[in-house]
Structures are given as C-alpha cells and as structure tokens.
Amino acid sequence: MVGAERGHHRGGVISTQTAPDEGRVEVHDLTKTFGSVTAVDSLSFTVEPGQVTGFLGPNGAGKTTTLRMALGLITPDRGSTTIGGTPYAALRQPARHVGAVLETAFHPGRSGRDHLRVYCRAAGLPVERADEVLARVGLTPAARRKAGNYSLGMRQRLGLATALLGDPRVLVLDEPANGLDPEGIQWLRGFLRHLAHDEGRTVLISSHLLSEVEQTADRVVIVGAGKLVRQGSLDELRRESAGTVTVRSPQVDALAAALAGAGAAVTTTAPGALQVSGLTTDEIGHRAFAAGVELHELSARTSGLEEVYFRLTAGAEQYAATTTPGSVA
Amino acid sequence: MNLVRAEWTKLLSTKVGYWMLLVAALMAGGFTALFTALAGSENGLPPVGSTAFAEVVAGIPAQVAVIPLVLGIIGMTQEYRHRTATPTFLVSPRRGRVVVAKLLAYAVVGVVVAVVVVAVVVAVATVYGSARGGAPDWTSDTLGVLARSGLALVVFAVIGVGVGALVRNQVGAVVGSLVYLFVIESIIASIPATADAYRFLPGGALAAMTGSGGGGVDLLTEWQGGLLLLGYGLVAAVLGSVLAVRRDVV
Image 1: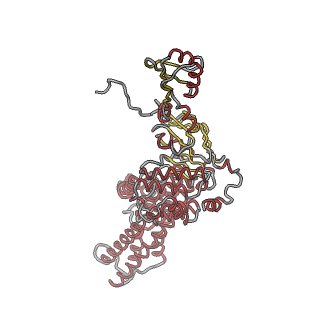
Image 2: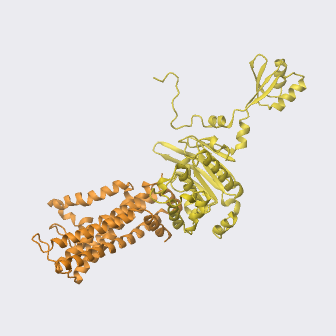
Image 3: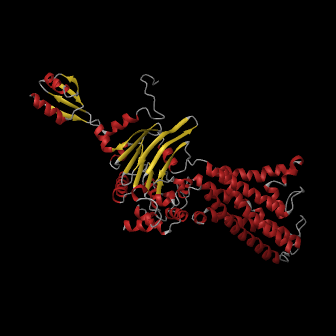
C-alpha cells in the first residue's frame, strides 16, 4: 500500500540521483550571526536515510536556526546545506523531497482539510492527498473542524500531515513531541520509526531533551552554543556512559595492585571498597580470579545517557541560570 | 498557476473574503441609495435621470476602494500573522513567485469585487432612480467613469498585497494605510503649500481617475491618474517581493 503510493508520487521526479544519496542531508559549515550573538557557528553534520536522527541541544543552542537555514528560510552568513546533493531552494518540487514541521502554523479559521488542500494546490499535488494524509495521522474525524479549535496534539498531527503531503524522502520535525500527551508521544515514536526503518526515509527530529528521543533515535547530533558537540549513534553514546565499577574485597591492596597493572584507575572509597574505571566487570572479575583475590561485590554503575548529554552540553545554555552560592537575596 | 489557485483556496476557505465582499456591496448600495434619495434636492445633487446624476453614480464604486485594499493587505499579512509564511515558503522556496501569485490572485479578486460593486450600484440607481422619476442617463463618458471606478478597485487590491508585503504587521498595515488615505492625504490636500503635490498621491490619482472629489485642487487627467495609481501598485508589489525574498523567515 505504502510502497505503491510512493511509487505513484515519486515516478520520474528524481531520475538523476541514485537512491541511497537521495535522502542524505549534508550540513556544511553553517554560520549565522544575529546582531552580536552567533546563533550557529561553523556547524557541519550529516543525516542518513533509513534512520531517525535526533538533533539535540539546550534551548538557544541554534537548532531551529539551523533547520531554518537548511530549508532556505534563513539565509546563512556562511555555509550550505544539501538534500540529496541539491540545496533546498533549488529543488524543483521541494514538497516531494522534504517535509518539514517547524511550527504548528495554520489559519485558525480554516479547517484542517482546507489547510492541507491549500498546500496540495501550491505543491501541484492532487487535493485528494489531503484526505490521505489526514487518515495517516488519525485526524479524519476532525478534518472539517476549524484548526483554531484543535488541541495541541491535533495541531502537531496536522503539521505532520502537512509535511507528509508530498510523500517526501526526508522529514524534518522541530520539537515534534511538544504538546503531545503520553499516548500521542507513543504513537509518534512508532510512526517515525516506521517511516525511517520500514520505509527508508530520512527522519530528523530536534529536541532539547535527550529522554524524548532516546527511544526513537538511532543517531544523535548534539549542538551547544551553535557548535557541534557530538555526532554518532546512540549506542556509541551509551558505551561512553559506561561509568565506574565498585568492588568490595577483604584483600583490597592485592586487588588494587592487580588492577593497576592492567591500566585501570583505582581509588579507595571506603575500607574494603574500591572504585574502578577503565575496566569492565568481566575484566575485573577475571583479574581478581587470576590473582586469587576474594570478591564480595562487583557492581557497575552507569552514569546514564542523560548525564552524558548534560556533561556534553554543560555551559552551552544561552540563558543559563546563575547558580553562584550565596547570591540569592 | 498552482500558486495562484492556492491563494484562491486560501481566500475561499476563510470567512474574511465573503465578509469584505458583503461590506463592499452594502456600502456601495447604501451610498447609491442615499445619493438617489437626495438627488434633485437643494443640496446640489443633480436630479435622477440626468447625465450628471449618472456621473455621480459612476464614481461611487471607487468610494469603497478601501475594501479591496484591506483585502489585499490581509491576504499578504495573514501569512505572517498566522505564521503560515513558513509552510508557504517551504512549498515554494522561490518567494518572489509567491508574491507574484498573490498579486495575480488578488487582481482577479479585485475584478470580482469590482463587478459585484458596480452591479449593485447600477441596480440600486436604476431601480430606486426609476421609482423616483428616472434611471441614470448613461452616456459613453459616464460609462467610462464607471469602468475606471471599478478598475480602481482592482488596482487597490494589488496595492494592498504590495503594502502587506512591505509592512507584514497586519494591524499596522491596515490602520496605517487607512490613516494615510483619510487623514494624511486630506491634510496634504487642504494645506495650500502642499496641495499641489496631492494630485501625485494615490488618493489624488484615484480622484483624478474617477473625476470625482479633489475639493477644488487641480488633478491629473483620468488616464494619467489611472496609470499613476497602477504605478503605485507596481512599486509596492516590486518592493514587497524584493523584501519578502531577502528577509529571513523566523
């Protein structure tokens, strides 16, 4: 069903590009200054098809500005973005390549269905697409109601429906979970993963919360103060979050000597207890056994993704609250 | 062409367009009825059935030019007010085309408003005039005034889109252009030192075009006025397009 639909809309539109590159988004050296504030600073990253990529950073890190520059709405001071090798503004039928929800924008007096029909017309798509995408996001019962009376969650769905009109290869969503109830978030996660994993689309979602994309994203691009802080898979980040191991033993000195020889950092935290970093629990257990040391506890403590994210973006908040002790009147 | 149709879909799927058309028709019909009722009395209006009365009637459609002006302003500024500029410019990143499509779409909307207004004016003047002693006596001259009067509505719709693209703030653009037309231009026309310039302003051009008003100030000829008005419309449109293309959509 979905495959046939895509074949129908994509037929002959993109004939010069090879399939895998078609949905790749390449951001190169983007820079934008507003007055004295450098909102985005020499930012480069790549977003691949078939994956959900989380675009993360604290509020004011330059996420929205970056997305707007990528989509030709803001002119960068320097740098460029290509979608399947072409800048957004040069795409012949952008709605068929990229669907974007940057804000829930609609005329409050216009019904959801008419809103979509406007963009069907503008994009040269058959107006029947409006009803198809309404069904896809579960808004059919509210199709003829004024969008101004929609709940926040329904507005997000209408925005998503607008983005899906042209059956695009690439989806860009700015803070899509805002205003969704837990059920809506659950639905959105499943929907986005389906679009990326089963349909091979490129899905880029921005968020200021890692926990919001943790269950959805395969990769993350983390920015702070307009600069790239980190890009990589969530698994890589998880490995990085593997923290320290606590070991208790009646023979701490012998154990410490055995572990130090293996290149681990060892600190004594309490009588009979060590904190070890740089080795896994398996490795520590093996070395203890080889040295004939008796162990009473061997437990890993992971710092958690959220902590890693916080560490990476620490100090990058544009309007960070001052936490100087004693400064509170 | 797709973009022009999109603009019509936008206009027809909200209520503002229908309301504005109704207001324009009511205002024009009301003025005509009032003028017909007062025709031939001592306050200077020519009697019904005369050519002079037909000329007065022919100028009435231009009196509601603010309606297509406001419609054009709303058509452009609602994109910024309701933030739909973002999806609109995403679908058509060549923003100049969006503005051109709006200009074309609203020129046609202006034609529709003009046809309705002219029809209402003629109908009221004919029916009510006949009841009072005679329908207006149309000549090629007075029909020419009527046609230019209607054409002025089309030009004002185009000017509205241009002004909207320039100002972007809906309330500011509407209030600003009304204050300009009804207050500033009146002051300019009434001060002897500046009255000479009035004929080159949009209001003066509109008055010249329909051969009405002017308050004793020298006006341009009808066609000069019409061309000047069109010129204002085009300048507003070109400036608006250029700015819409260059400004960031944030």
